[in-house]
Image 1 (cartoon, protein in one colour):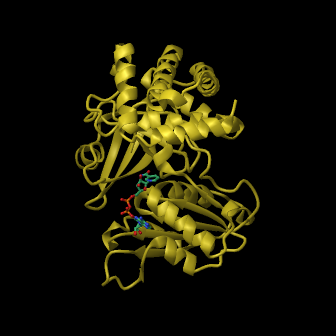
Image 2 (cartoon, rainbow, N blue to C red):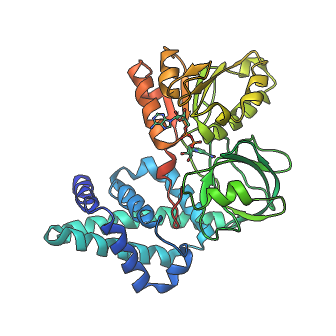
Image 3 (tube, rainbow, N blue to C red):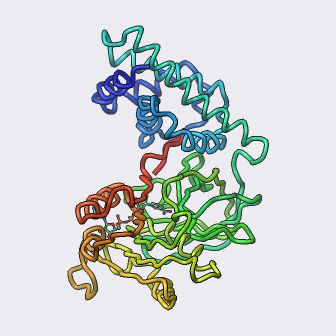
Amino acid sequence: MDPAALKNSWALVAKSGDEVPLFFYSHLFLSHPEVREMFPVSMAAQRDKLVGALGAVVSNAAQLDEVVPFLQQLGRDHRRFSVIAEHYSAVGASLLATLQHFLGAAWTSELAADWAEAYGLVATVMVQAAEESAEETPAWWPGEVLGVDRRTMDVTIVQIRPQQPLAYQPGQSVALEIPYRPRRWRYFSPANAPRDDGSIELHIGLVPGGQVSGPAVRSLKPGDPVRLGAAVGDTLKLPDHGRKDILMVAGGTGLAPLRAMLEQLDRRTQPDDIPRVHLFHGARMPWNLYEHKQLTRLTQRPWFSYTPVVSDDRSYPGQRGLVGSVAAEYGPWTGHTALVCGSPSMVAHTVDELTGAGTPAADIRFESFGTTTSAGGQQ
Ligand SMILES: NC(=O)C1=CN([C@@H]2O[C@H](COP(=O)(O)OP(=O)(O)OC[C@H]3O[C@@H](n4cnc5c(N)ncnc54)[C@H](O)[C@@H]3O)[C@@H](O)[C@H]2O)C=CC1
């Protein structure tokens, strides 16, 4: 397999922008109409998700070792779409046909063989993980909304109880499907450490024009049936051992997974096991600091401190500015592990600011939410 050829050819294809997913899905649905069922009725906002993610992952298949755990999680997670081995073949065939179409004369037999091999490796890892997990866990978890707290105009806190235990680690995400938008799954991070009764708290923020977040924030009510997917994500997590101090930087509802970690730390009984944590929570407007009271209360713990940051309200009397810039100014964060979560642009900005202020990139952990994929797309 020639890694450079895979990467370069994918970069070339990606230049054709929206044309690529359009061709891919037309090919997929024409050749395998039965697969259409697995995607939302309206495909408008979904088009680029699957093929974009596939191209990115498969063209990096030479470093497969690094992404195996991620692919395994993805394989398990995709069981909620009833994805079976034959579907992987259908998707692979359409991917190759798409590449051939856009690469024209550059689609040589060597390149075709490399792509086929790379896709085969990726799909095998996913299929195997899915098959193994089928023995122990359901394809998706039916659940029920227990409670809804419309905390601000833009944020609803939802409590959900899955019918069967759904294992996750603070920092991971689970896909959610609400009855008002069938088959439009979106990822959210549980905001609580695992509870005895298995219930999960999700922080759902209103995305302007969002097809799912609108009804999720405005219409979800106790008793509503929902579905949840398997937990995914392996980069945003507490350091395993030691008492290395922690810096947390959250943008908006990106606070959720960090809150789950705070709860996890708060349960530790040995003071020596609890690192010192400083959290910056950024919001555009003061009322979007939707956990201000709870976080202020938590500052009674000797190990926790917190700085709210507001970016778009000049009259705000506290810290103003972009949360990543403010966090970097408070540094240097030498010897800390930094955990960053929020929108992709907020995360990119924060990582830039922290590294610019001297924090080693290796000490910064973040989950790039936008790149986790699903058959039906997300976000
Ligand atoms: N709900 C959940 O469970 C999770 C949500 N997320 C993501 O967190 C994000 C939360 O979005 P919102 O609540 O709407 O927050 P928001 O977009 O209103 O922004 C919150 C903070 O991020 C800063 N910010 C926004 N754009 C920025 C940029 N381009 N550069 C630097 N700073 C920027 C703002 O100034 C503010 O401090 C969403 O993208 C969501 O997907 C991530 C993980 C879990």
